[in-house]
Length: 274
Image 1 (cartoon, rainbow, N blue to C red):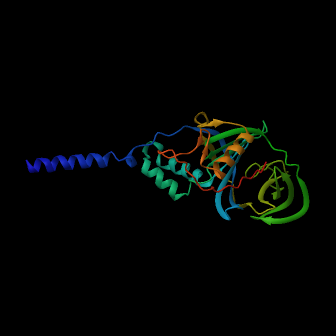
Image 2: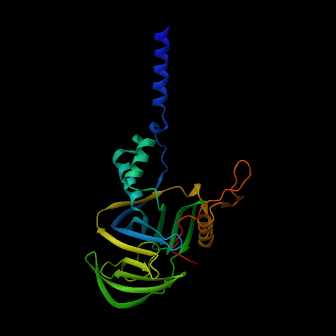
Image 3: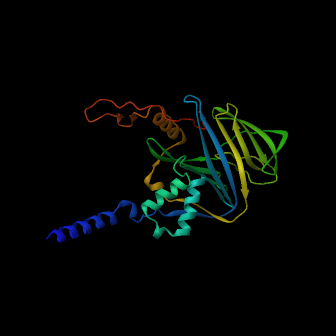
């Protein structure tokens, strides 16, 4: 009888281990495919919260196609490539966690899709009050183009300046790369933006590499699960969620005994101040 109990214990332990959530296969969200990119530009984004005096560094990729471009977290892009290599049908929860750690794909989880013919963009971002998205027309930066030049990543670039939604931006664009695009929302110049910095130093985008490989332009087809809003509504929600994370749409966060939960201010440094 003792051996029977030991055998039953071993079988139960094995089943519990085998049913670990880390071993479960993932049900993947379908992807939207915009076709093939002709060029991929890697950017480093240095962002500083002037109140917390904290600086974060992100890596992003801009995928440029004939009809659209996609600006997204470089780590998330690398995760998608590894998913393709392994095969989504073979990926478990534990494997996905490891991939996100490997490529540091957990922060700055937003993407911007620019559609050239329609001259509009889609902005999608995870915030403290949920994942939100909005559409807007290509912004009019009203660029002031200078004759000043310098070399970036082997390309001769020209300087341009814009006062845009609360910040003054100094950017460097490459006239020989005849794409009116750049990191974040930058567009409207006769060449690709390779470097951009806000005059206050809170934001710096720097090109780290230019590649001409063919690559699919894809994002998760998940907008139906998120909250559609306006640019103004998004900026308001982002500010509220970061500066006062204890406050939600339903009111103040409380504990089970009814006492309020006071959370510290989070990192907050939007590119747009108004």
